[in-house]
Length: 232
Image (cartoon, rainbow, N blue to C red; front, top):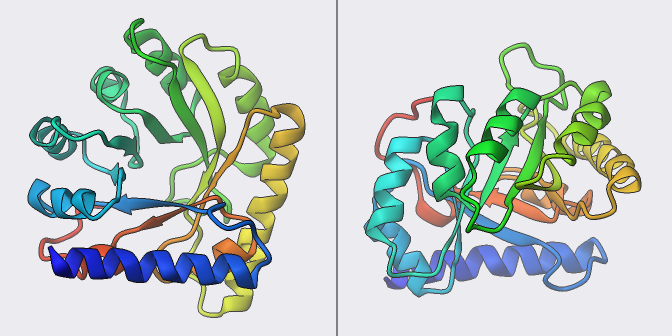
C-alpha cells in the first residue's frame, strides 16, 4: 500500500510541477492509470490511495477487474483497439472509450449502450504520425468522423486521443503533441463540448502537458515494469 501511495504521489507531484512550468491551471491535467496486465489487488491499492480513473486495453481482463472492484466508485476507460465483436460488453461496462477510429464502431457502441446509463464518453483516436501499424483516424478525416459521431444519441464526444511514434528527442515530442493540440483546437471550434486531449505517457508526459494535454495515461510510473509480456 505504501509503495502504491508513494508512486501515485510522485506522479501527481510531477503533473503539478509540469502544469506550473507550462503556465497551466492547477488540476487541469487528469491522471488515467493504465492498469493492463496488473491484478485487481494492485488497482485496489491505488484506489485506496485516491486514484479513481483506470484505463484497460484487453476486454476480458478488464471485465474481471471491474467485477472484482465493483464495491468501489471507479471510472473505467477502454483504451485498446475496439473490435466489432467486443462493442456490446464495452458499451455496457465502461464509462469512456478513448480508441474510436471508425464510424461503424461508434454506431455499434451507441446502439448497444444501455438506456439507463449516461451517454458513453468518446475520444476519437487520431493516427497523428500516420503510422501504418497503428490504429487511428487520419488527421485530415478527423472532423468528418467527429461530425458523424456527435449525432449518435448514446455517445458524448469528449475529444481526442493520440499515441505518437516514439520520439528520440523532446523537440520531436513537442512537435507531435503540438500538432495534436492544433487538431484539438479545430475540433473544439466545431464541437465546443469537447474538453479532453488524451496524450502523454510515462516517458513523455512533460512534453504532452506543455502542449496542452488534459489527460495523461500513465502505467509504468504508477505500477513499475510489467511482469507479464505485453499482448500488443
